[in-house]
Image (cartoon, rainbow, N blue to C red; front, side, top):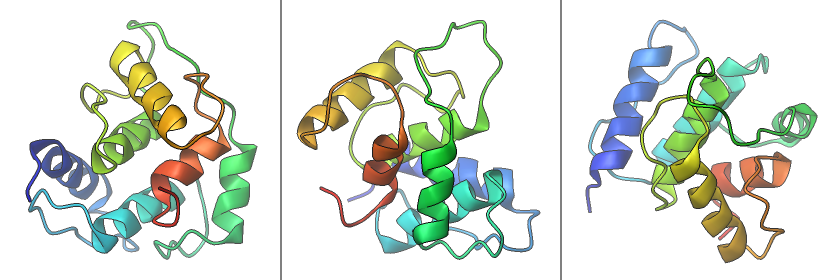
Length: 142
């Protein structure tokens, strides 16, 4: 079933990364599935300097996630963060309403992450740490 927010995420990712030779264009159909999840991982890898972006969540990519600073609720006037855009896209793909793809981690995103954390039986903090990254970018977690 097609979802307008997943479609928005597909368009965002294609527009953002289309000029990178390692990017694989996503079909813009609003469907979450393996190709979409691989696209999210590939976008994360490209955004965070992982060599040889494969779209697979391997040990190197997980270590990069673990080394990222924790993201807490932002001020609406803060500069957009590309990693927050990826989190917002991933939240849509997992069925959580993140507001929009703004790069500002604010009320809707915080509430969506809290809901995801609760559903995943991990500590509910509303902050984005490596466990949130893993939960949102892996097909193996809930």
